Picture (cartoon, rainbow, N blue to C red):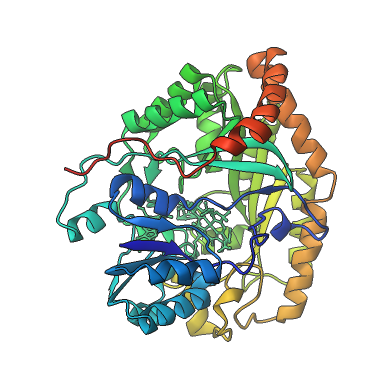
Length: 440
Ligand code: B12
Ligand code: SF4
């Protein structure tokens, strides 16, 4: 069985998160060479071969090896690429095609596959092969971050829970995974010990909502302390406010948080069921900043009740927060969300090109703002929230965070890491999996 992601057009086609949120040329990137979903599947169901972000020709060459089943992992905005791959696989005689990841939530796309898997799927895939996965094993997920030719850091990605029950109306996660499940703490410790051994600079938690299971989150934080690791997390402002004293005692190494600000408009926050006040979010941001912890914000523009002027006003307010980086999105209806039904019924979704559902385009009929103007507002926001100097602010925070947790020896360690990142890791960096697996 072969599982693959969508193909890329050229090797330099590395997804650059920062570039998607600025108007100038950003050379800083965190390489998207690792598919966490496929690595988890491979680690737990090792019979499956995986292919990550291949070129079209590499995909075809791999198909020629002959497979019983080919599976595709994709996001909504990669749908067209995957349809092309599915058609080619069928043309080349592949008998069974599977689909997984968020892309398969789209009803119109489901008929292209013989079988679809919604949600986290290691157990179901193993079952389909006549096996059982007992406990999920977290694979090592190490990604380089830097500028072309020079890695500044290696980040260890960590998932501690799966699923979210908060039900924000714009978000697909509650339809994707209905129950919240924990990754076993032993599995988390194994991967953190590995990151430590490898000299990984920062651990980044990418759960839907870190803190969903509070006791489990505390146990994870205790492990950061044990292994003296710097860590970043995406979480909610209300949660971080409660946990800040415990998480940032100056030793645990909380280096930064990603917070969903979503909007400053109280009507919007109520409409999207955010269950948080804008003021509450702003005061958490300030509290976090006061402690020298980095903040990445997630903000959305273009709700139906917003006007050109109200958006500009909010974006100016966003800029005043001086965050280390901000992800700015145009509100985009995604399949199987309450927002999709609301927008489709009341305004209509005109866009047929799934590439544009990457949260940087207006894909529906906004009552007062046409698509071109909405994109101009997005660029206005990029300049307010992510001016060039934010990069320097971020680097300074990283340095201060390191000194705070490790003293000046931390700076020496950073320099050592730079050497490891560019010389040692480059040689070592291969798709690594832990030995042994969870299949009986
Ligand atoms: C990391 C991440 C990214 C990284 C991806 C890095 C990478 N190398 O993969 C980056 C920064 C590039 C990214 C960008 C975007 N992302 Co993103 N991202 C995430 C995040 C935080 C984690 C995803 C992850 O790795 N999960 C862990 C793994 C283990 O789970 P998984 O990938 O779902 O895989 C499991 C299942 O899906 C299934 N499965 C996966 N593949 C397959 C294949 C087969 C054949 C089968 C059977 C099963 C199967 O089994 C896997 C193991 O259980 C999620 C939020 C979250 N916590 O889920 C958002 C999320 C996936 N992103 C989202 C969005 C909207 C985007 C963007 C469109 C815009 C944006 N706002 O950032 C862009 C577009 C990217 C692109 N296509 O170019 C949305 C939904 C995506 C969608 N609508 O399709 C999410 C859910 C966030 C949210 N709540 O809004 N993202
Ligand atoms: S946006 Fe975050 S908190 Fe809201 S439902 Fe999605 S994953 Fe949960």
